[in-house]
Structure formats: C-alpha cells, structure tokens
Image 1: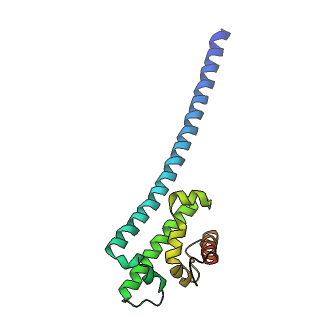
Image 2: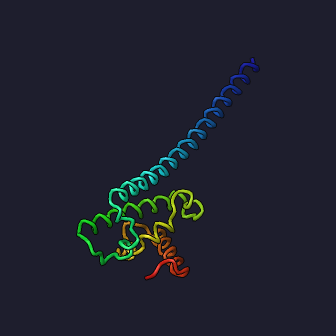
Length: 155
C-alpha cells in the first residue's frame, strides 16, 4: 500500500517541478522577446530618421544643424528639423533605458556620439527637455561636455 502512495507523491512533486521550470523558461523567453521588441523599436526610429534625411537632406546637413536655432530657412524646415530631433533623441532615450545606461550596450544599439555631435544645438535649445528623465538628460549633457573637451563641437 505504501508504494503506490510514494509513487503518487513523487509524480506530484515531478509535475510541480516541471511546471515551475516551464514557468521560469516562459518568463525568461518573454523578457528576452520584450527586450528584442524594444530594440527593434529603436531600429524602426532610426530607419524613420534615415527615410526623413533622404527625403529632406537638410535635416542631416552639418551647416544646417549647426546654425540651429538661427536657421536661415522656412518655418517648415525648422519645425521639421525639431520633429526629426525629437525622433532622434527618443531613439537614444529608448536605447539608454534598454541598456540600463551602460555605454557599451548603448553603442551596440545606436551611435550616441554621432547623433549628439550633429544635433546637440537642438538639445541645448530645448532648455529643460522635461519629457526625458534626469539620468538620461545627464547622460546626454555628459556626452556634449566630452565632445566639447575633445574639440569635436563648439558651444
């Protein structure tokens, strides 16, 4: 009589252990898929930036970007550039948070220095950048400071 009871107990324990392992694996896969979806969203934003810069080449033109906010062009150009920069910094913000602020991991997703070097004047003109959290704002400002120290950008 005791043997079937032990077998039943072992079967129950094995079933619970299997369900627990299955749940852990499912959770791991779901987290990995969520992270990959977030990275793909950043890639989609950068693809949109490329599409816009092909359609409107001035958006990535060095002279145009460096003349901000005193652009010698139409209001349409200025508002389009501001929207373009919003997409750019949103992409960087998402990459920053996906990578938990770790520079090496951010660099795998997006090139922050290239983006900030080109569009830092727009960032600085938007005084508070309140739509972004403090750690991200500090991150962008620290890259701007480093680029200035290396002489790659001017105030």
